[in-house]
Image (tube, rainbow, N blue to C red; front, top):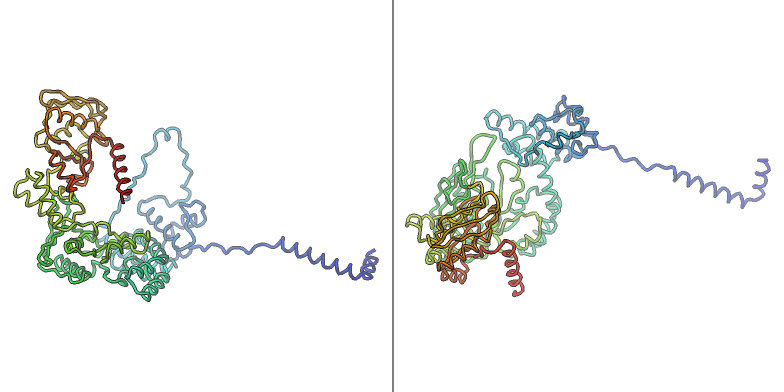
Length: 598
């Protein structure tokens, strides 16, 4: 039979060709359907490298093998250097806290009915950083961080560039623990990647006239090439910008501060200072750090032209693994002395603080200052998360010294300083001379007793309407003197009662918690009218408080005082008889009206 088929096909060559073509196509389809896609390469495992270099101790091999194969995200070792470094940071934390490193102990927690009724307290939200305290612990931490850097490089977990920037920091004692080093290396890598993607920065700098076309092109090339690992490293490429580092200055306070201020002055064309002085002082009641144990400030005084300038800044101890102490001035405060001088001269320029990302994570650090105009700062701010993180808001809001002095004299004429002795008045003016003000009302922050502070936590465990009435009596100089006060709102909603003149006044009030009930001031203002006492109470900015915590500020003004203050825009007065919702609605209406007027 087969011979017949062959004979038939040989006599019909066209049919034979067709059958051969069909068989070929079928074979091709069958091959396509059964072909397997190329297998992805197996993920790179760092297990052997971690064991070989000692990054993971031999007794923790089972934990390492579990982390290399588990599908639970929180325990995975990972297959890239960055993932492995994060895992190593978690591993070091477990060792520090003596947590489990036994995979057999990881069981699914099933809460019983009793445990659901009485759940354990949540873990603390604040991370406590413990620096090595004894000389032996510092030496050990110093050696460990240097050794860790070398181990990471041997395990292939640091690139050549990362190793070059990490080893000097470890050698200088900038990392206080192995975990701190691991987390910092990863944070610095993220920042370096962000800098590589800062493509909008060079053309913006060129458009602002801060770089030539060739300089902008070179900067763009270097950003893409990963030359920079910290935003402040860009500053040496820019005009009127400078990078500062504490390690580059003398250890002694006076030569360090004088040289630092002279270097800052070089950023300001033609600005020279004389009569430089500086000394450490204990923060007083005007300090930003009240009741801080061991806190110290440094007061710097110098003369620019014919004017004396002073700046009070925090004096911060610098922790060091290498021993010795080199305190440093607060980098985000001290330079505003020069901004005050620029404001007095009517200059469009200000010094702007440029934050170092690296300084957020290591013990020591660096920072940048850059002289620029407000339009330049605004243009760079529109870039969003740009390569240069500027803190420029305060710099361009500083009031000239003459404006501050005029505001002080205006408040003095209105009687806000009448309760001060000559010595207290001189102290208030001295503190004003050391501060940088952004609004005229801030003058009263440095005049004790000029506003009434109604205080809650932490000074008092709760609000008290009786105490609030005492505050109102004091700031009205006794013109409003309620007696027989009965506060029934201490622990729940209730009734407040007091006597003024020969009349008794009372009103239901909410318990005084978040803010005073406005019905209290409705009652107080009515009592003032009925007793023919000229004046009203007004609420003013909480920023005028000298106390910390929950504080509400009030002033008492006669009608002439109120008119003068509103005409000169000395204070932002708020009606305390309004609820928060009513006050917000009025503020939104004013904002809408001002915008439509523009």
